[in-house]
Length: 433
Image 1 (cartoon, rainbow, N blue to C red):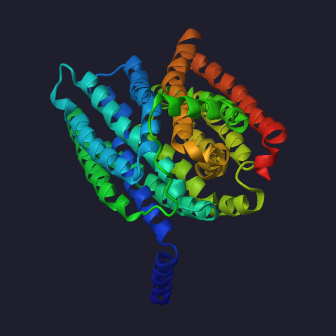
Image 2 (image 1 turned 60 degrees about the vertical axis):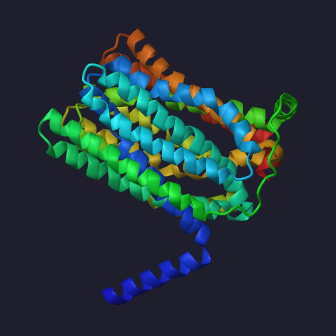
């Protein structure tokens, strides 16, 4: 019976690979890029702490890479629009990310300046990966995938990335927890960066398999073209309203990114294994609901279900408040349970946000429009974690201050979801149809 089921599974896999080669190629891309980001990125805070970083450095860990990305987005968007082959930009960016990840790992060999070298090289790695590669990927995706196939392709890619995000944190967390000495843990972090380099370079070769079926015409870069593109963008009311509502949502989401770790590590005293369970629980919740939400997209479209994902994120502040308020033997588990429940709807953000953006961008200046949007989100990602730490410290910098800050975030995330619903009703009705 088991052999029959295994054969059926293999045959189904072969059939899917033959009938959906684009989904498979994007799925492999997702496995490789998220594998690299997961191995290198899940424990940046812990690695930084072991190199001597304090709370301010941890905030800078988020701020510096995002600010670096922010500086290049608009020029990179214009540059991408001028390219005949945007896939080449992705390949170069992945090779560069591999180089900088390796240098970030070696920063531990410079004890006097380890934290600063790590922050710098990590910023450059993220600039390559989350800046140039991500922008080129977003611009190339609609050239390679038809609108009718986008939900299917993104669903399969999301499933692959979620599988990676389930396995990698558990493996990494278990390895780090099993090592007793700080020096041993630092060596393990360095090994993780080497593995991230291997995955990143592998993806640079794999991405060449994805061909454009509807390539955009290269745009000539000039001041006149930039002025025309800016005017067209400023006149796109759907895009402006979309950016305003989504920016506020991201601001309230990004505000707790450093505080989240402070709550887990400083007040719930979660070890590496417990910390690794946080993304695993979130990914598992997404994975088990992904098929449901993908089918729901086919019925309702991609805009309305995004509201459910926004509302689900309200559970994360609740999880922190409950977790730090309960005894140490109960708090972390209660936190994980509530965090997981909130992520049952998070697949709507994973699947739908980018598709919603593609509905409102001008196809003639797609890369430029995407870069402006990404610039706004990146600015939020750079500033709001610092703002969250500032609010927390302003209330006293203790566990009560943490509770108050997260209580405020519950209220503001409700407001953000309300803004999105208003946008659907008053500004997005034609788009939603």
